Image 1 (tube, rainbow over the protein chains, first blue to last red):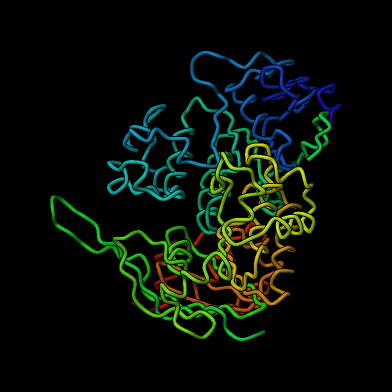
Image 2 (image 1 turned 30 degrees about the vertical axis):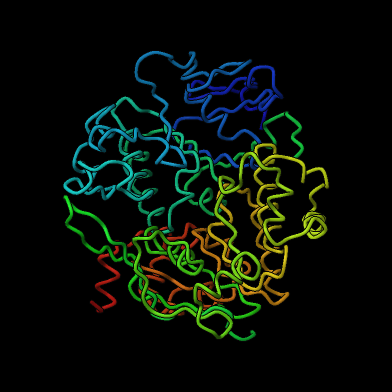
Amino acid sequence: MTGETASAGKDLLLEAKNVSFRYGSGPWILQDVNLGIRQGERVGLVGPSGYGKSTLSRILSGYEKPSKGSVLWKGAPLPRKGYCPVQMIYQHPEKAVNPRWRLQDTLSEGWEPDDALLADLRINKDLWFRRWPNELSGGELQRFCVARVLGPQTEFIIADEMSTMLDAITQAQIWNALLDQVRKRGLGLLVVTHNMALAERVCTRIVDLKQLNLVGHDA
Amino acid sequence: MGKPILEVNDLSVSFRMYDRGLTQYDLNIISRLNVTVHEGEIMVVVGASGSGKSVLAHAVLGILPPNAAVGGEMRYNGAPLTDAVRREKVGSEIIMIPQSVTYLDPVMKVGRQVCGVHGTKAQQQAAFRRYGLRESVAEMYPFQLSGGMTRRVLISTAIISDARLILADEPTPGLSQDIAEETMRNFRELADEGRGILMITHDIDIALQVADRIAVFYDGRTVDVCDREAFLAGGDALRHPYTRALWAALPQNGFRAVAPEDFMKEEGAP
């Protein structure tokens, strides 16, 4: 799987090229990771905890700079200014929203979602818009986190364990709404999960970071 | 299955809240909750977030905030679970395994934390041996442990002393498949040695590997209790519409999301 970038075609959307990462001069977390995601692919990223799945996600979405190697978006370096075409959804929505903003403001920071999308995600506009984040449950908050990243300039979504903390029905609701958008708009998708049944359900391809990452972790 | 170790009958919990100024109102969190855990049994509690799962554990331990009003009956080992019983049993016979790493004291070495108030150094060492933790781990602080090690440290607290009832709140999120499965096997062993386990979780797949029975909570009440076999079979083997909806929403069973209004309509109850 590591050799797949050699045959890189023009249809590669997002690509990690020989990406290595460590904090300061600490131990290497990622070493020489190569991963390419093509248009129309939905890739599941699995692997034991501590192997750098979340770190790789943050690098691929531009929140972290790789210590070595590069991240390419459609063959060019990932834009570091303006609206990033790669957007992230996190595991803990309560840590991903500003606690001092009403949800209405959090939702419209990047764009103004239309009513159809809000209905798909079952966001209760009248009841929830004026509330503060601590007045909603995790599942309710996560709906906002999904809606806010689906702006018209978004072309790729990275979902890092986004439904781990949710009950099965809420999980299915949010995923179905997101997959609907992904299909309709041809978005790229990278799904980080521990749940193999979920990965098999939503992804077209599953990769194991254990095989991609050359760091010999010893848990 | 042994005799009942924990019986919760018609438990209700409400919180007294302040509205504007001094106006107060009662917020009902749990209305009619019933659950029984037998010796040697793993009872898994599932349900939507906000359905009162964690509040149940806190009610059993008597650690609800002061503005909470509790109704109904709780019995431990056949006798009413009173504050006097709690003072004697919680921490020795009744153990809570908390949800996450953040429950460990960040500035205390984990060996001492595992000993707690009632345990001894020897018991701690035996527990660490059992779960494959090196002796040097006892001298470490929580930030030095990986997720899987932390999980094993937390579970060590449960076998220190003679725990007979273990309450586990979301023991698996963030763990990789193999560590989660190992954690479940550990719980199964603890149950097979005669302990009763109440496991609160969203991770139905993992929990089903070791569960005996599943209690399904919805909106602060127990809507269904079913055997593991029934839940694995799914479909018509499940009585309550919410249980069926939960089953059908699992990625391997159709990934269908039924709106709460729809299954409550089907139920026909108020």
